[in-house]
Length: 136
Image: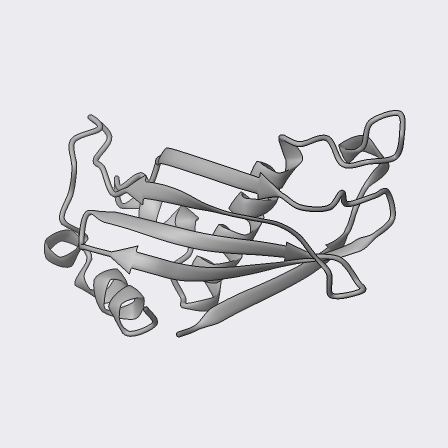
């Protein structure tokens, strides 16, 4: 199974007064992981959207184990958990520089057109379909 990793430093604006990352930022980090995962396969979101296909999140969950803090270097590990042509889900794990698991979770997305109607990506963009299916 292919796992993409991206690392970055926690910015001050992502933390609360105690220097701990405010919880909604983990979902932003999931998005960073997901878009970097797709980009690493040659599936740039911008290119997909320019062809009239959108990929909204329809479900998400995050489990918090330990806090990330200001100036920590965090790594988001992203893997494609399930892909069925219209619907796909990703798993995420977020680690600090000490390789401690800070949080983990998942998102579920669905390929839709601009009218928000589900789209079978295999029929509309077979190149994207085969890139995703071969890395599951």
